[in-house]
Image 1 (cartoon, chains in turn blue, brown):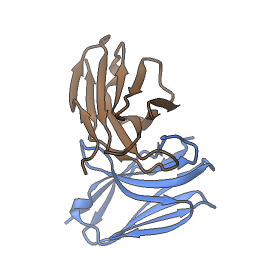
Image 2: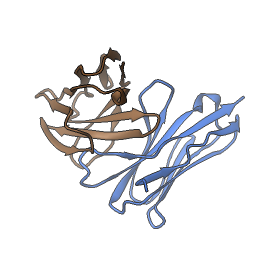
Image 3: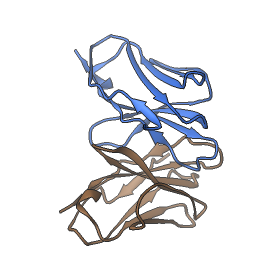
Amino acid sequence: QKEVEQDPGPLSVPEGAIVSLNCTYSNSAFQYFMWYRQYSRKGPELLMYTYSSGNKEDGRFTAQVDKSSKYISLFIRDSQPSDSATYLCAGAGGTSYGKLTFGQGTILTVHP
Amino acid sequence: KAGVTQTPRYLIKTRGQQVTLSCSPISGHRSVSWYQQTPGQGLQFLFEYFSETQRNKGNFPGRFSGRQFSNSRSEMNVSTLELGDSALYLCASSLGGDTNEQFFGPGTRLTVL
């Protein structure tokens, strides 16, 4: 079993839809959680960085972490075609020393 | 502030050769992590350097090695290349310490023929 599980999709939604992306993790030591966006043939771009449980909002993006159920989510409001990319969730523990553990990534397409 | 830079961007090698990839972190960042990304395995952690010391290592064979210089720039080396080493190699930098907020470079795409 992978430490971070993520449905690879693909996920296709119309422009303006609310997108929900989810991951589960098994490592109880994880305290930091991240969402990255990766366009084709580019490096991952950090979207959201959260510590422990709770919600964090940044513009159209909201990240949620529920440590009790080991579940992390990213919501994208008013999705745009430019949001079409692969979304990667990642977790890290306090003493992981630079090691992020990633999910497989979800391919998202937002069509006009 | 300039982002993470990686050179070269593309590389083609043959089996048995060795390769060195370079990464320059964001100014002020002291930690550099390396990852291998393939369609089948996704993003996998190779190793991390902080203040010229390797602090963590992933489950890769000894053919994969790295180092970090006093200016925080880092290199990784892969010796005796195999076809399966074809991948996108990404480096990410962070301030270090307790933070895991990592910023990635564009990657080096290595093709082994």
